[in-house]
Image (spheres, helix red, strand yellow):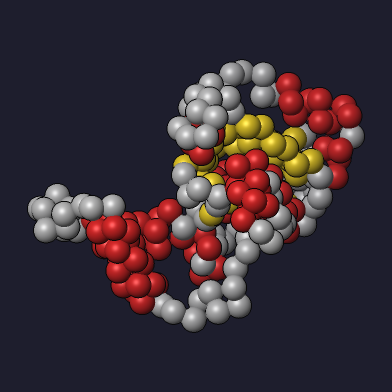
Length: 221
């Protein structure tokens, strides 16, 4: 692939794979080993930019960045951090859709490594199993904490919920601002991106319409 095509993909925020592009040896190093390597790389970047790393404020920055990458910002790359999605029997026989609105999304654009900030709205219809509300938030968090494109993130959240609940009847809508659009490039600070994934009954017009009616309130960032 030539440089022009690579730049076009990045500037147009085009996804090229349904899964996060990880190498086969992605987990050969321990988290601590990764932190040490990233620390040196960040130090090299800052020194190249001309920063004085002997300054009291900057001395700890390379390690802070490395630890944040591994333990927080990109923790969702490590399968060991995947939340357990415990389910329970739907003993009260609730048969309507459950909607969890305004789940905070903090992710990172994989093209420029700049933040994606928004809200996810997640819903499912039980076929005999229910999942704890906090688990829905944790599923969103886990798949958000990695270099992402929003379309893939939306699909991964729905697939994880479908797997946990044993039903296709899951839907997700994400409304998010991309700082790679807002703070650089076109520098449009007002626009946001909306993606959706509908499974099972949510592909039916009336069910999808009912779900979207729950989302009529303006999304707040």
